Amino acid sequence: MPVTRREPIPPFMVMDMLRAANQRQAAGEAVIHLEVGQPSTGAPAAVLEAAQHALRNNRLGYTDSAGLPELRQAIAAHYWTAYGVDVDDSEVFVTTGSSAGFLLAFLSAFRPGDRVGLAAPGYPAYRNILTALGFRPVLIPVGPSSRYQIDVDMLCRGGPLKGLIIASPSNPTGSMIDADRLKDIYQWCALNDVTLISDEIYHGISFSEPAQTARAFGTDAIVINSFSKYFSMTGWRLGWMVLPPTLARAVECLAQNFHISPPALSQIAASAAFKSKAELDGHVARYRSNRDILLAGLPRAGIKTFAPPDGAFYLYADVSAFTRNSLEFCQKLLADTLIAAAPGIDFDPLSGSRFIRLSLAGTSQEMEEVVSRLCDWQGGLDRASRVRSTMGSGFHRKRSREITS
Image (cartoon, rainbow, N blue to C red; front, side, top):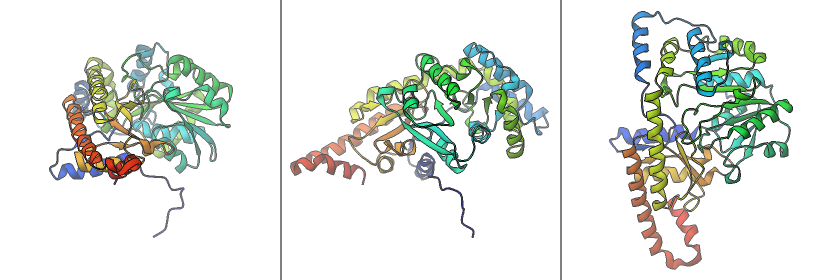
C-alpha cells in the first residue's frame, strides 16, 4: 500500500472521545455527552415542514454551485434584520457546512507557504486544514488578559501574516470580540494587506450583548457562518460565506469542482429557519441556564476558573489543580463518572494540557447530574488524597499523577 506524502495532521480528539463515549453508551451505560459541540435539539419545526414538502414535491437535483437564489436572498436579508448591514445576495455563497466554507476560503485567498494567524486556544480544524493544504498556521497565544481573543497589539508584535482567522463567540472559550476591537482588527488587516476570515458560526448564541459581524465594517473580510449551531441543523450540513467581490469567482470555480452544489433538500428547508427565531431563542435561554448551573456547581468539585463564557455553548475550564494531561484526565473522567468531555490539548497545543471543554447544549437536568457526579468523584479523590497527605510536600504532584493515571 502506498504511504501518504501529505503533511501529517493530528486527529480531532473530540471525535475520538465521542467514539469512546458512544461505545460505553451502546453497552447500556448512562453517559452524559459534554464532548461534542452540537445542539441537543433538532431542526426547527418550520424547517422540518419545508423539508417534508420538498420531499413530496421536488425532484431534488443539483442547484447552482453558489446556492439556491431564494436561500441566498434570505441570508442576505438576515444581515439587515440581525445587524442592520446591507448585503447583496450576489455576495452570499452557500456551502456544504462551514467546514467547506473554510476550505474554499483558504484555497481562494492563500498560496502554499502563506502564514495565517489564529488564536490559541481555538478550533483545531483551522490549523489542521491549513497544514494539510500547505499553508502555515501561526498560533497567537491568548488568555485572561485579552479575554481569550486576539487584539491589534498582538498583531503588531507578531511577524508578517497573509491571513488572520478570528472567531466570536469562540470555540472553545465562548469569549467574544466587542464591536470596537473587531473594527480595529478589520482596519489593521485592511492596512496590512491581510485577509481577514471571521468565523461567525455561533452568532445568535450570546448571553449579554449580541455579536457583531465583520461585514459591518466593509466588504474586505470573508465571513463564514452556518446553520449548525444557533439554527440547530448540524446534520443538514449547510453553511454560507459572505465574500469580497474579488474572491467570488475563485470560490465559485473551486466549489463547482469540489462539491458541485450544497445539498438541495437542506437548502430548500433552510430558508424557513429564519422564520423560527422564537423557537431558537428558547434554546439559547436553555444554554444560558445550563451555563449558570455549571458556573455555580463546578466550584464545589474544585473546578473554579473558566474562560469568559460570553456566548456559544461551552465552558473552557482550568483543571490544572488536578492534571497536566487533559487527554488522560478526560479519559479517566469518562471511565469513572461516565461524563464525556473534550481535552483542551485539542484546541491549544501550547497550554491546552491544563484545560477541558464542556458543552452546555444538553438538558438542564443533565447539567445538574454532571455537578452531582463531579462532586462525588472529587470527594472520593479528596478522601484518598487525605490518606496520603502524610507523605509530605510531594502530595500535589502524586495526587495529580493518580488522577491522570
